[in-house]
Each structure stands twice: as C-alpha cells, then as structure tokens.
Image (cartoon, rainbow, N blue to C red; front, top):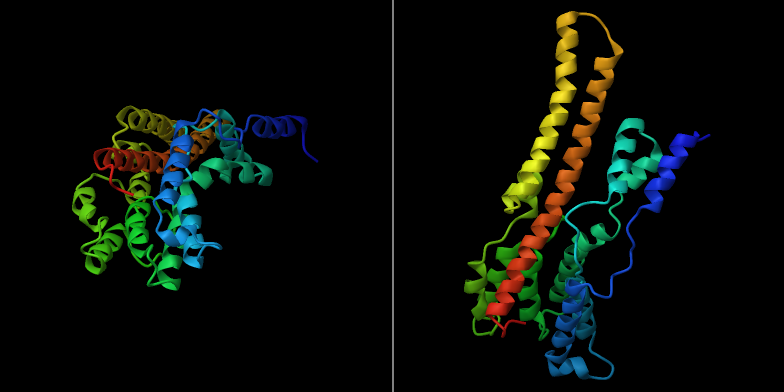
Amino acid sequence: MLRAPTLLLLLTCVACAPSALIRPDDASFNAAQRELARDVRAAPPAAHAEPPAPDTVLWLQAESLYRYRFDVEAERPTASYVAQLAAAATDFAPFLVAASSEGMMDLRLHAYDGAAQLYEALLARYPNSAYRPLALYRLGWAYRNTLTEGFPRDSAGAFELLQREYPTAPVASLVPQLQAMPWRSQNTAAALSLIPGAGQLYVGETANGLVRLGISLGFAALAVVPLVSLAHERHLRWIPILLSTAGFTGLQVSYTAAYQDAQRAVLQFNERQEAAFSTAHPEAP
C-alpha cells in the first residue's frame, strides 16, 4: 500500500505534466503547416488525381511527419526532475514510468525517424515515382535528426544518391550548398553527453552546458567526498552515507537530463540551419 508522501509525490508529478495540446500561437507549428500546404500545391500533377495515386498518399504521409514541428522547450518541467529523482531513489515502478516518459517531446524527436521510414518505403515500393528525387532530398535533411538505428543510409548517402541518379534535377543542384551548411549529429551529442553538458557545448549552448557541467561536478563531489572521509576515519556514520547517496542520485539525474536536453539542442540547431537555407534558397522544396 502506498504511503501518503509517496502518493502525494506521484500525484504532483502527474498534475504538473505539460499539456499535450499545441498552442494556437506556436510559430513553429504554424510555419510547418504553411510549408506542408506549399508542398501539396507544388506536388506533381498526379497529386491532384481522383483518387490520389498510392505513391502520392505515401509521400503526403511522409511529408506530414517531416513537417511535424512545434517549439521544444529548452528546460524540462520541474515535475519531470522530481519523477527522475524519485525513480532513482526509490526504484518504484510508477516513478520509473513517469521518469522514462518524454510525452510530446519524445514524439517531436522521433518524428524524423517516422518520416525517414516512410520516405524509404516510398523509394522501395515505387522506385520510378516522380517523388523519388524529392524523397532523397528530404532524407538528406531528415537523417541529420534521426535517433533510430538500422536505416539503409545516412544523410550524405541520400544526397550522393540524389546527385548520381538525378544530376539535372533542381533539388540536386542545391546539394553542394546545403552540404556546406553546418549541422550536428545526434550520435555525437549522445556520446559527448557521457560528460553532462558536453552535448550542449557541442551545439554552441555554452551557458547551458557549463551550468549542467557544474551541477554534475557538484553532485560528483557530494557523492565522493563523504566516502573518502569515511575511509579515512574508518568509522561508519550515517550522515556521510546519506549525503553520498544523494550525490549519486543527483549525478544520475543530471546525466539523464543532460542527455535528453542534448537531443533537443541538436534538433533545434539543425532546424535553424534548415530554416536559414530555405530563406537563402526560396526555390528549395
């Protein structure tokens, strides 16, 4: 049976969860809708057939996921950190579920994985589709943000295939310029996040990265120093043990939070580069 403090903490985590609804004034989402409408208007004539061709349907499915964008907050809600602390300290199943659930953030991050999967399905099922060069172009961008392993190619591979198969296509002429655009890798950010804050430094969020690094170093000191003092004293005392436990718990949470925030930072960095490229090249699809 749950004790009153545990139940209260769990209810607090649930009550403080962010809304899943997209705000009417969300600029990123509204811009994505305009881009999708433009994609439909600019689609090949087959897109306006009745009923639409199968490759058109698959293309629009992929485009919808690719354009699934809304503003991602740089900081996680307080309730999320509370849930992570509770999960790390108690190993209580509901807290573990709450701590591992990213909600809308998770959907936002994995939208590119879904889009890449659908674009690749289009290439495989309809190799002669009029959408093929556009799908390769989209894949070149989408693979810069994917998190899932097992895709048949990467960003560079998609762009290279586009240039090889359709050297005279308008989208192929854009490849040299867009390959010169800086971008960041989710895999690199994940590897760097073994040191909390390093992933943020990788994408240029210096203040964010230094704060996270400082917090993790503080927790590391809290975890180690009491144990060192106990080793020197050779006498078991509960206060140093509790302090050290709190330090290890905080270090675990700071690592998890920094890793998840680095994913968000890479996503936003790459999307800013894409937006800048689209502004500089209005002819880009």
